[in-house]
Length: 301
Image (cartoon, rainbow, N blue to C red; front, side, top):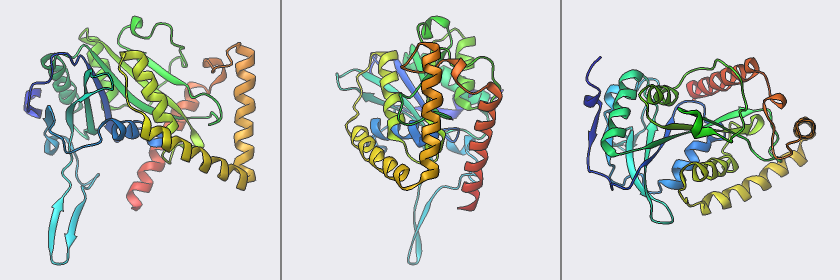
Protein backbone atom coordinates (compact mmCIF):
# COMPACT_ATOMS: atom_id res chain seq x y z
CA UNK A 1 0.00 0.00 0.00
CA UNK A 2 1.22 3.50 -0.78
CA UNK A 3 2.30 5.66 2.14
CA UNK A 4 -0.89 7.00 3.84
CA UNK A 5 1.03 10.12 4.89
CA UNK A 6 1.06 11.24 1.25
CA UNK A 7 -2.71 11.76 1.45
CA UNK A 8 -2.70 14.56 4.01
CA UNK A 9 -0.81 17.58 5.26
CA UNK A 10 -0.83 18.96 8.79
CA UNK A 11 -1.12 22.74 8.52
CA UNK A 12 -0.85 23.66 12.22
CA UNK A 13 -0.57 21.75 15.48
CA UNK A 14 -3.86 21.80 17.41
CA UNK A 15 -4.35 22.59 21.06
CA UNK A 16 -3.01 19.68 23.16
CA UNK A 17 -6.32 19.49 25.03
CA UNK A 18 -8.43 18.46 22.01
CA UNK A 19 -8.85 14.71 22.55
CA UNK A 20 -12.18 14.33 20.72
CA UNK A 21 -12.55 14.24 16.94
CA UNK A 22 -15.96 14.23 15.25
CA UNK A 23 -16.16 12.57 11.83
CA UNK A 24 -18.83 13.62 9.31
CA UNK A 25 -18.33 12.68 5.66
CA UNK A 26 -20.66 13.61 2.79
CA UNK A 27 -21.71 10.98 0.29
CA UNK A 28 -23.17 8.08 2.25
CA UNK A 29 -26.54 7.75 3.96
CA UNK A 30 -27.35 11.03 5.71
CA UNK A 31 -31.13 10.90 6.09
CA UNK A 32 -32.66 14.31 6.72
CA UNK A 33 -29.15 15.67 6.10
CA UNK A 34 -28.73 15.39 9.87
CA UNK A 35 -24.93 15.05 9.94
CA UNK A 36 -24.58 17.80 7.35
CA UNK A 37 -26.69 20.14 9.48
CA UNK A 38 -24.51 19.36 12.50
CA UNK A 39 -21.42 20.35 10.47
CA UNK A 40 -23.16 23.56 9.35
CA UNK A 41 -23.96 24.35 12.99
CA UNK A 42 -20.48 23.63 14.34
CA UNK A 43 -18.46 25.00 11.41
CA UNK A 44 -20.06 28.36 10.59
CA UNK A 45 -16.91 29.57 8.81
CA UNK A 46 -15.89 26.80 6.38
CA UNK A 47 -13.04 28.96 5.05
CA UNK A 48 -11.32 29.04 8.44
CA UNK A 49 -7.79 27.66 8.48
CA UNK A 50 -7.79 23.88 8.98
CA UNK A 51 -5.50 21.84 11.19
CA UNK A 52 -4.98 19.26 8.45
CA UNK A 53 -6.09 18.80 4.85
CA UNK A 54 -6.43 15.74 2.61
CA UNK A 55 -5.47 15.66 -1.06
CA UNK A 56 -8.86 15.61 -2.79
CA UNK A 57 -7.22 14.95 -6.17
CA UNK A 58 -6.25 11.50 -4.92
CA UNK A 59 -9.55 10.67 -3.25
CA UNK A 60 -12.46 12.25 -5.14
CA UNK A 61 -13.91 11.12 -8.46
CA UNK A 62 -14.80 14.48 -9.95
CA UNK A 63 -16.89 12.95 -12.74
CA UNK A 64 -19.27 11.37 -10.23
CA UNK A 65 -19.46 14.50 -8.05
CA UNK A 66 -18.59 17.44 -10.27
CA UNK A 67 -17.42 20.51 -8.31
CA UNK A 68 -19.29 23.74 -9.00
CA UNK A 69 -17.61 26.31 -11.24
CA UNK A 70 -18.93 29.84 -11.73
CA UNK A 71 -19.06 31.45 -15.17
CA UNK A 72 -19.38 35.26 -15.37
CA UNK A 73 -20.24 36.75 -18.77
CA UNK A 74 -17.05 35.90 -20.65
CA UNK A 75 -14.81 33.93 -18.27
CA UNK A 76 -14.61 31.28 -15.58
CA UNK A 77 -14.55 33.15 -12.27
CA UNK A 78 -14.20 30.48 -9.58
CA UNK A 79 -13.92 26.80 -8.78
CA UNK A 80 -15.35 25.22 -5.60
CA UNK A 81 -12.42 23.00 -4.66
CA UNK A 82 -13.58 19.96 -2.66
CA UNK A 83 -12.21 20.22 0.87
CA UNK A 84 -11.69 17.23 3.13
CA UNK A 85 -10.14 18.71 6.24
CA UNK A 86 -9.77 18.68 10.01
CA UNK A 87 -10.74 21.86 11.86
CA UNK A 88 -10.14 22.73 15.49
CA UNK A 89 -13.26 24.12 17.17
CA UNK A 90 -14.27 25.22 20.66
CA UNK A 91 -17.46 24.30 22.47
CA UNK A 92 -19.55 26.72 24.54
CA UNK A 93 -17.48 25.96 27.64
CA UNK A 94 -14.18 26.69 25.92
CA UNK A 95 -13.15 23.06 25.38
CA UNK A 96 -11.29 22.36 22.13
CA UNK A 97 -12.22 19.48 19.84
CA UNK A 98 -11.60 18.49 16.22
CA UNK A 99 -13.97 18.01 13.28
CA UNK A 100 -13.06 16.00 10.18
CA UNK A 101 -15.56 16.77 7.45
CA UNK A 102 -15.90 16.88 3.69
CA UNK A 103 -16.64 14.48 0.84
CA UNK A 104 -16.38 10.76 1.52
CA UNK A 105 -13.47 9.44 -0.58
CA UNK A 106 -14.54 7.61 -3.73
CA UNK A 107 -11.33 5.56 -3.80
CA UNK A 108 -8.45 4.39 -1.60
CA UNK A 109 -10.56 3.71 1.49
CA UNK A 110 -7.92 1.57 3.18
CA UNK A 111 -5.23 4.15 2.62
CA UNK A 112 -7.55 6.91 3.81
CA UNK A 113 -8.44 4.94 6.96
CA UNK A 114 -4.74 4.42 7.65
CA UNK A 115 -4.09 8.13 7.15
CA UNK A 116 -6.88 9.04 9.59
CA UNK A 117 -5.35 6.62 12.10
CA UNK A 118 -1.98 8.32 11.73
CA UNK A 119 -3.58 11.73 12.21
CA UNK A 120 -5.42 10.54 15.30
CA UNK A 121 -2.11 9.51 16.86
CA UNK A 122 -0.28 12.66 15.78
CA UNK A 123 -3.01 15.04 16.96
CA UNK A 124 -3.50 13.32 20.31
CA UNK A 125 -7.08 12.20 19.69
CA UNK A 126 -8.34 9.66 22.23
CA UNK A 127 -11.95 9.30 21.01
CA UNK A 128 -13.32 9.49 17.46
CA UNK A 129 -17.08 9.95 17.04
CA UNK A 130 -18.68 9.23 13.66
CA UNK A 131 -21.96 10.90 12.71
CA UNK A 132 -24.66 9.35 10.55
CA UNK A 133 -28.43 9.30 10.01
CA UNK A 134 -30.50 6.42 8.68
CA UNK A 135 -34.11 6.29 7.39
CA UNK A 136 -36.44 4.27 9.62
CA UNK A 137 -40.16 3.46 9.79
CA UNK A 138 -40.75 5.71 12.82
CA UNK A 139 -43.01 8.75 13.32
CA UNK A 140 -41.67 12.28 13.72
CA UNK A 141 -44.04 12.81 16.68
CA UNK A 142 -42.13 10.39 18.93
CA UNK A 143 -38.60 10.58 20.39
CA UNK A 144 -35.92 9.86 17.81
CA UNK A 145 -33.81 6.80 18.48
CA UNK A 146 -30.05 6.75 17.97
CA UNK A 147 -28.04 3.63 17.23
CA UNK A 148 -24.71 3.75 19.11
CA UNK A 149 -21.85 1.40 18.32
CA UNK A 150 -18.23 1.38 19.35
CA UNK A 151 -14.83 -0.25 19.10
CA UNK A 152 -15.21 -1.52 22.70
CA UNK A 153 -18.36 -2.71 24.43
CA UNK A 154 -17.54 -0.44 27.39
CA UNK A 155 -17.98 2.61 25.14
CA UNK A 156 -21.65 1.82 24.48
CA UNK A 157 -22.56 0.25 27.80
CA UNK A 158 -26.03 1.23 28.96
CA UNK A 159 -27.25 2.16 25.48
CA UNK A 160 -30.01 0.09 23.82
CA UNK A 161 -28.92 -2.34 21.12
CA UNK A 162 -31.39 -1.66 18.35
CA UNK A 163 -30.28 -4.31 15.86
CA UNK A 164 -28.88 -7.79 15.71
CA UNK A 165 -26.83 -8.81 12.68
CA UNK A 166 -27.40 -6.90 9.45
CA UNK A 167 -25.50 -6.50 6.18
CA UNK A 168 -25.61 -2.98 4.73
CA UNK A 169 -23.60 -1.05 2.11
CA UNK A 170 -20.24 -0.03 3.51
CA UNK A 171 -18.83 3.45 4.03
CA UNK A 172 -15.43 5.01 4.57
CA UNK A 173 -16.48 6.11 8.07
CA UNK A 174 -17.53 2.58 9.01
CA UNK A 175 -14.22 1.22 7.72
CA UNK A 176 -12.35 3.80 9.79
CA UNK A 177 -14.14 2.67 12.96
CA UNK A 178 -13.45 -0.98 12.14
CA UNK A 179 -9.73 -0.29 11.66
CA UNK A 180 -9.58 1.88 14.80
CA UNK A 181 -10.98 -1.01 16.81
CA UNK A 182 -8.49 -3.43 15.32
CA UNK A 183 -5.69 -1.05 16.31
CA UNK A 184 -6.96 -0.72 19.88
CA UNK A 185 -8.16 2.88 19.48
CA UNK A 186 -11.47 4.16 20.83
CA UNK A 187 -14.20 5.03 18.38
CA UNK A 188 -17.95 5.50 18.62
CA UNK A 189 -20.54 5.77 15.88
CA UNK A 190 -23.86 7.59 16.19
CA UNK A 191 -26.71 7.01 13.72
CA UNK A 192 -29.95 8.88 14.38
CA UNK A 193 -33.20 7.26 13.17
CA UNK A 194 -34.97 9.63 10.78
CA UNK A 195 -38.63 9.09 9.79
CA UNK A 196 -38.37 7.62 6.31
CA UNK A 197 -40.97 10.02 4.92
CA UNK A 198 -38.72 12.95 5.93
CA UNK A 199 -35.37 11.42 4.98
CA UNK A 200 -35.00 13.26 1.67
CA UNK A 201 -35.44 16.75 3.06
CA UNK A 202 -33.57 18.61 5.79
CA UNK A 203 -34.74 17.49 9.22
CA UNK A 204 -33.08 19.62 11.93
CA UNK A 205 -34.70 17.59 14.73
CA UNK A 206 -32.41 14.71 13.75
CA UNK A 207 -29.37 16.98 13.85
CA UNK A 208 -30.35 18.08 17.35
CA UNK A 209 -30.64 14.44 18.42
CA UNK A 210 -27.13 13.82 17.09
CA UNK A 211 -25.73 16.81 18.97
CA UNK A 212 -27.33 15.71 22.24
CA UNK A 213 -25.80 12.25 21.81
CA UNK A 214 -22.39 13.77 21.02
CA UNK A 215 -22.63 15.73 24.26
CA UNK A 216 -23.61 12.61 26.21
CA UNK A 217 -20.74 10.57 24.78
CA UNK A 218 -18.00 13.22 24.88
CA UNK A 219 -18.95 15.69 27.62
CA UNK A 220 -18.76 18.57 25.13
CA UNK A 221 -21.26 21.42 25.30
CA UNK A 222 -22.27 22.33 21.75
CA UNK A 223 -24.30 25.27 20.38
CA UNK A 224 -27.80 24.55 19.06
CA UNK A 225 -29.51 27.94 18.69
CA UNK A 226 -29.75 27.88 14.89
CA UNK A 227 -30.92 24.27 14.88
CA UNK A 228 -33.52 24.95 17.57
CA UNK A 229 -35.05 27.67 15.41
CA UNK A 230 -34.89 25.53 12.27
CA UNK A 231 -36.55 22.62 14.11
CA UNK A 232 -39.46 24.85 15.16
CA UNK A 233 -40.00 25.98 11.57
CA UNK A 234 -39.71 22.42 10.25
CA UNK A 235 -42.30 21.14 12.71
CA UNK A 236 -44.82 23.76 11.57
CA UNK A 237 -44.23 22.82 7.92
CA UNK A 238 -44.54 19.10 8.65
CA UNK A 239 -47.81 19.55 10.52
CA UNK A 240 -49.18 21.66 7.66
CA UNK A 241 -48.33 18.91 5.17
CA UNK A 242 -49.93 16.25 7.35
CA UNK A 243 -53.07 18.34 7.72
CA UNK A 244 -53.31 18.95 3.96
CA UNK A 245 -52.71 15.32 2.93
CA UNK A 246 -54.94 12.51 4.15
CA UNK A 247 -52.50 9.92 2.80
CA UNK A 248 -49.55 11.37 4.72
CA UNK A 249 -51.68 11.71 7.84
CA UNK A 250 -52.70 8.05 7.65
CA UNK A 251 -49.06 6.97 7.30
CA UNK A 252 -48.00 8.99 10.35
CA UNK A 253 -50.90 7.71 12.47
CA UNK A 254 -50.11 4.11 11.52
CA UNK A 255 -46.47 4.60 12.51
CA UNK A 256 -47.53 6.18 15.81
CA UNK A 257 -49.76 3.20 16.61
CA UNK A 258 -46.97 0.77 15.74
CA UNK A 259 -44.48 2.71 17.86
CA UNK A 260 -46.81 3.04 20.85
CA UNK A 261 -47.88 -0.61 20.74
CA UNK A 262 -44.30 -1.85 20.61
CA UNK A 263 -43.26 0.54 23.38
CA UNK A 264 -46.11 -0.61 25.64
CA UNK A 265 -45.33 -4.28 25.04
CA UNK A 266 -41.66 -3.70 25.80
CA UNK A 267 -42.33 -1.48 28.80
CA UNK A 268 -40.14 1.30 27.39
CA UNK A 269 -42.31 4.26 26.39
CA UNK A 270 -39.29 6.41 25.64
CA UNK A 271 -38.33 4.31 22.64
CA UNK A 272 -38.23 0.93 21.01
CA UNK A 273 -35.81 -1.93 21.18
CA UNK A 274 -35.01 -4.41 18.43
CA UNK A 275 -38.34 -6.18 18.91
CA UNK A 276 -40.29 -3.17 17.71
CA UNK A 277 -38.17 -2.36 14.67
CA UNK A 278 -37.85 -3.76 11.15
CA UNK A 279 -35.74 -6.85 10.52
CA UNK A 280 -32.16 -6.68 9.32
CA UNK A 281 -33.32 -7.42 5.77
CA UNK A 282 -35.84 -4.56 5.97
CA UNK A 283 -33.13 -2.17 7.17
CA UNK A 284 -30.73 -3.23 4.43
CA UNK A 285 -33.47 -2.81 1.83
CA UNK A 286 -34.24 0.69 3.12
CA UNK A 287 -30.54 1.59 2.84
CA UNK A 288 -30.48 0.33 -0.74
CA UNK A 289 -33.64 2.25 -1.68
CA UNK A 290 -32.31 5.44 -0.13
CA UNK A 291 -28.97 5.21 -1.95
CA UNK A 292 -30.60 4.28 -5.26
CA UNK A 293 -33.09 7.16 -5.10
CA UNK A 294 -30.34 9.60 -4.13
CA UNK A 295 -28.05 8.47 -6.97
CA UNK A 296 -30.89 8.64 -9.51
CA UNK A 297 -31.81 12.16 -8.40
CA UNK A 298 -28.16 13.20 -8.54
CA UNK A 299 -27.70 11.91 -12.11
CA UNK A 300 -30.77 13.83 -13.29
CA UNK A 301 -29.63 17.20 -11.87
